[in-house]
Every structure is written in C-alpha cells, then in structure tokens.
Image (tube, rainbow, N blue to C red):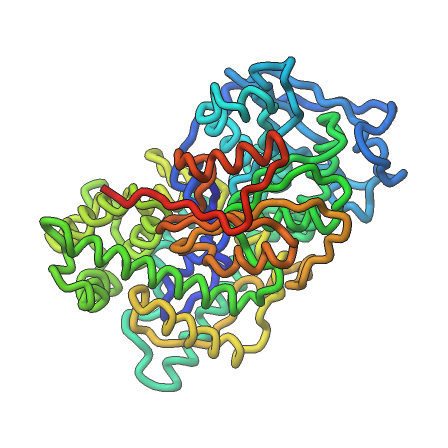
Length: 540
C-alpha cells in the first residue's frame, strides 16, 4: 500500500477538532500506517561529493550547475545503498546555505535490462521516501519494476533523515497536545466563545513560535513543494537520468504535478495515485475531505452491522449517534489506560479515521470500539499511535511537524476570522461523526501566523510539452476524494485509471488489475485504455 496523508491543516481547531489530526490526510496515504514504523536505515547516510563535470541531464541553470553535476557518494545501508544529495536551502541564493536530501536506492536486479531510476514518494507531506523505497523493494522483488528499475526514495527537504530537519514539538508536547482542551464544556454564551477563540489563537501562535525557534525561519520558508520539485530535478540529474520516471502517492501527487509544470520536458513517466486537485482552494479541499471521511464512516458502519457483533448494533443509520455516545464522554473524562496514559476523544476520532485508509483496519477498529464500550481503550490508542507516528518508547516521528510546516507554505492561509468561522461550520456539517459538540469557532490556525509567506497557490497547471501521464483515483478514498483525481487528470490531459473500493491509494498493493496497468506504463510507456476500471476486494 502507498501514500502518507496527514490532514491539510491539522493545527486548526474547530467543532470537529479531532478530525483535524486526520485532515492532513489530504496528504497522508495509507502507507503512513506502515511506513512510519518501518525499519530504520541500518547505517548512516553518506555525504555526497561534488564534481565540476558535465551536466547529468538536460541543460541546467548556470548558477545551479554544480548541484546538477554533483557525483553521489553511495554507501551501504543494510541491503540498500544510501547517500545525501546537496541542494541550495534557498534556490534564490544558490551560494548561501545548503540542505542535504537523504536518498536510498535498491538497484535493478537485472542490470542488462535496466530502464532507469524509478523515484517514489509516499505522501504526507512529511512521509519518508527512503522508508517507502525500502518497503517497496521487498514488494517489487521479482517483478518487472524491481528487475528493470533502480528503485529510489528520497526524504524531501526538512523531512526524515534529510538535514536540516523540521522540529516543532518535543515528544512530551505531542502527548500533551493529544489531550489539549480549551474548555471543559461547550461555550454557553458569546463571552465564553470569545474566550475560547482567544485561547485557541494564543495556542496556535505559541506553536508557531516554537517551530520557528527550533527549526529556523530560513528552513520553514523553503520547505514547500515548489522547492521539493526543484530538488527532484537535481536528483534526476545526479542519478544520471535524462528524463524522470516517478511514482507518487497522495501528497506525492502534488510533488509530481508541480514537477510536471516546472520541468515538463524532463518527464518520462508519472504515476500519480490518490490525487490532490491543484486548482482547489484550501477550504473547499478540507470540506470535501471531511465529507469523504463521513462517507467512509457510513460505509464502515454498514459493514459492521453485518458482523456477528457491532458496537453500533444492527442499524447503520444510528451509527453516528451511537459513536457519539461512546466517544463524547472522553472530552471531560479521558479514559485511563494500563500504561498510565489517557485515551482522549481526539485519539478515538484519529483511530477511527485512520482505519478508513485501508479495509484491513476495519476489524481492529470494530474491536476497539467494542472494547471502548467495555471501558477499555488499548486497541484504539494503538491505532491512534500508529497514525501519529508514536513508537513503543514514546518517541514520535517528525511527520506531524513537517506536515504542518509544508502545508503552511504550500497553501494560502485564512486570515479572516469570519472566513474561518464559515469554514468551521462547513467542516462540522460535512463530518458529523467527528463533531465534538463544541460548535464552530473563528479561531485561525497556525498557518495564519506562519513566519514566512506561501510559495504556492492553488491554480490550474500549465504543462505544455508534458507527455501523457497516468492518474489513479479510488471511488471510496477518504483522504483524496475521487473527483480530485478526475479533475487532476483533466488538468494534465492524463489517462485516468478508476479504482472501485474504499481505501486511500491503490497502486502496488497487490491488486493485479491496478499493478499490471502501472507496470506496463512504467516499463513500456503503454497507458491503460481510456475508461479502464479496476475493483478492490472487499474486507473479509
């Protein structure tokens, strides 16, 4: 499975506050549930050397020539090769500070049949491409992709093993955040609503200040997808590839279409799975995601009602009300667990929403909700921890911090409290299962106070010269709704592969219809027939 999606603006709090932790899911794919706990690199990443030789690909800007012509110094990292790619921290100042992008490679098993490098990204933003490549290398072993491509993953600037890394919160602060509540009860009048607004914005400002102090404003200003796409072109050249072959999941589709717009003549093949619509406003995107999560909840409830035991009973129409009866009491009284921690309402919604990324998580969710009715919360906390990137030692991955930072420079923030209030109302209406009963509010999120302006805005891509590429969209995808893939395919004049099923992303997940179409395109540049559909197996 693929993709890593955190939700688009997960530092905003609204009446549906808990789903904010999942709405980054716009950009965090199902593989997030796997990748964040995946094996660590077995050896340190090696530094890369620079050479003053010829460009490794199409002509590069003179001021960037030394980056494009660098020679990568590969070291062994367990079963893989790894290195660092050097890039300017700020592309407008190529002689200034540098960043190092972590890269991992599994070479083609049949070098005599090698086509080139297949670069992959799992999404997020904030997902580790090196870990995705390590995971996919096992899945692709013995397949045409594993035999004919060097599989290459990279941690985008600021992410994972790349240096410098985005750092906003400590592990203890992340634990505290998951229990964060401004009010013990819903505001009863205008004065209480205003007090909650002030407290929420004070909290957001404080979180931004920590992020700026710990990460540095120069890093936070230059971690957007615009710069990641530039890094990927430097990587293409350093790998010795004339053209880029790329497989991106979820937020990784944003990297892909941003690259296509900036470097259309450098593209060999792109597969964009779990697409984001580049022309959709942040507000509309969030509302559509919330609505898609509600549809996923309703689909889960219908499946649950058919099982021998379901916490919602046999009537799926009452599932939202029953869910509230289980989850809402945790707002005032989080559930103590055996390890001394407490399960919050936000944790329950996070666990629930995370299970909609893949149907293999439906049974653990059903079990966890049954346990919650019995006063136990370990299974739900495990699901929430898995999504949040918290390991058994209480240490968090950097995914959450990177997600906030990248989204804040990728999207136009909402500065107007009235617009924030209107959005808050829409979000609650779109996903009633996640509603905590506090009602809408006008408090602005972290991005409104970000110390750097956005480097991207929603727009229709201009991709003249781009070969026809491939977009995959799944009808029941909660994190990147199906229509976004339809719209992206139209914008890029891409071939759309429709997948019927209820999960986030579909490529390289064992479905033969999907995987055969992806493999044939990446190896032979043969796209599936127009109108091709695939169907995922239902949960057992």
